[in-house]
Image 1 (cartoon, rainbow, N blue to C red):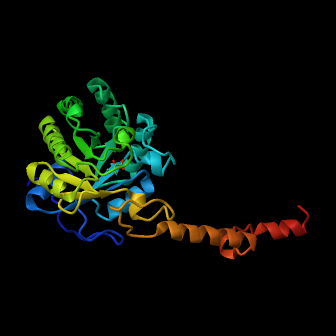
Image 2 (image 1 turned 60 degrees about the vertical axis):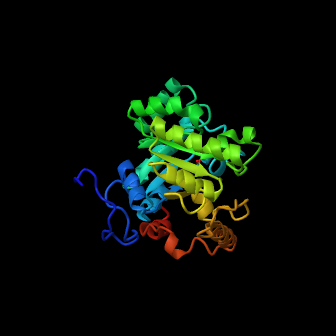
Image 3 (image 1 turned 90 degrees about the vertical axis):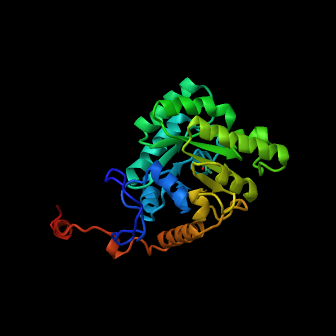
Length: 300
Ligand code: KIV
């Protein structure tokens, strides 16, 4: 392998970095190599520079600025109102915090059905947001847009199964691909996306047997969320895996790796109590002007 394509080998890192974090920038070909070697990789969503630094330090290979920011950042019920401007803004913020992870940005609702519109919007996510690739939802029906983007040199990640931008058409957030017809359709969509030039595909909320079949069928990596352990990679929404919404609904496929929501709540309650009791700010938190006391005595 040439020096232009660094490997994902173990290196020593400054404290706070995962010791087996990838060296250099993770690129599309590394994800393909991982699949070929049977080595799993991880992906998370991210929406700002502070978390991006943490995600990068942990050695996570792929970061997605998901349109789930409509839910977790903007507090909306669905991802449908998220705009291309929103995506550009958050992608640029995340890009400032990342040095190694591969950065993907979602094309939001209605921003890619027309291939020319797709080209314009994806171009903004790469040029202004500094993403390395875009993701879009849908199967064979978006293949023309995928082809157009790939022809223009824009890498595209697909997303099939539960596609939140189609929440109303699907009748809610439901498991997809169950039954013979749905299974065949999902397999056909996966093949159509690969043939159109996608370099990876997210499989969301489908039976693990079907995800395993897609993963076997395709040359390109699959990234599962609620799709079982046999995908080539896994992705979770960052706020879900960190437990940042202590009272929120937790889908079956989410594992909370921390309880940051509870920790944050405890800290805020303590802060409020300390302000009320004047325990904060304490001596170590205040500034002094040594000339102030003398000036006061002198009446100046
Ligand atoms: O927007 C998002 O967060 C996503 C992931 C759930 C894959 O598309």
